[in-house]
Structures are given as C-alpha cells and as structure tokens.
Length: 111
Image (tube, rainbow, N blue to C red; front, side):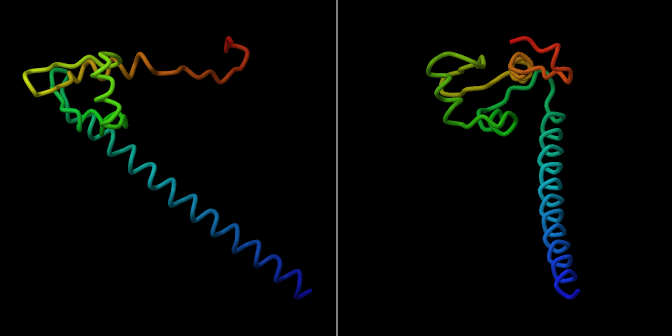
C-alpha cells in the first residue's frame, strides 16, 4: 500500500511541476504578444521606422535587415544620406504578403 501511495505522490508532484512550467511559459508568451501589440498600436500608417524598430516589430534580426538592403530585396526602405527608414505601411504589407494561411479542414489544403 505504501508503495502505491508513494508512486501516486511522485506522479502527482511530477505532473504538478510540468503544469507549473507550462503555465509560466504560457504567461511569458502572452506577455511577449501583448508587448508586440502595444508596439504595433503606437505607430501610424505614415510613421517612418528605423531598423531597430523594424527588428523589434517583426523579429527579423538587424543583420538580416542589413543584408536584405544590400541585396535590395524583401522590405522596401528609404535612404536619406546615411539614414535608413522603413514606412510602417510597407512593414504591414510585407507581413500580410508573407502570412501563410492555415486550414483546419485538411481536404481544403492543396499541395
């Protein structure tokens, strides 16, 4: 009897720790997403963003943004002398164009 009780308690503690870890991860993800939404809401469609702001908004590294500019690809940008800016509306357009649609019904997906 004591062995069964010990096993049950060990399993309970293990599951409890797993759920606590999942809860912490979920809380962190919710916080990150809410911060991203706040960042999105603070810009107007006419805003000009620097590369750091674009990186924070999209999650694209500064190195990648710089590489894309050298290759003149992906996100349009404005260069005024040494200053580089991105139109917020271009960022939103880029994100929309690269959004992958996911279907719940597998029959609708085409390969």
